Amino acid sequence: MARREGPGALRGRIRRLLAGGDIDAVLEALGEIPARRVASAVIPALYTGDERVRWMAVAALGHTVARLAGEDMEAARVVMRRLMWSLNDESGGIGWGAPEAMAEAMAGHGGLAEEYTRILFSYIRKDANYLEYSPLRRGALWGVARLARTRPGLFRGLDCARHIRPYLEDADPAARALAALALAWVGEAEDCRALEALSADPAGAVLRLGPLEQRTGAVGAFAAEAAARCRARCGDPSVLGGSGP
Image (cartoon, rainbow, N blue to C red):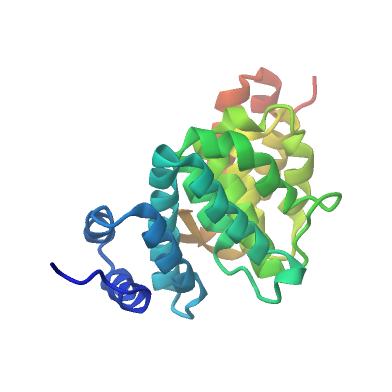
């Protein structure tokens, strides 16, 4: 009987797979390993300095936690809580990739999304669990934009537009663009007009629409796309004319 692969060996194998850059090959290989073992082995890859590998880890971990939730919801909750703990000051570390991985898991599993959307959203709210460190906050904002696009209905009742709107004026161009993408799906009529105004923003931003979908462009270009989606969604003729009701 073949000896079971130890934790260290599994982490090394997964790291090599992630570095290969083929997400289909990664998911196929990981699908043959119990999801609980995969989740524990992938999490350390979130801390790598290689951005490409980190985003591969986000995709792999999100997929794995969604798979685990389908098998054992409580085990999936344990992983989600581990990611949440890494964002807590008391953890003593920095939760690189944690908000993004949480969002990716929620995008893939409705039950997780029902339970954890409010928590993820709280990380960008100054009156809640606001993340002071801007790179982590940007990750949470990415997660909000990801879920706004994939599961917009979960944001009803959260007064989400009011809390996302200030990020349209954030000093970070990527944060402005991410806020625009989120408001495209959950914004209100007034946000459509704000997005129209932001379409003149010439600052450059590099964004990921999904963990492995990278786009580079002006904030204004992202805002213009978001404004068109917002107008179509709101169906407000006054927005099209740029005037109030």
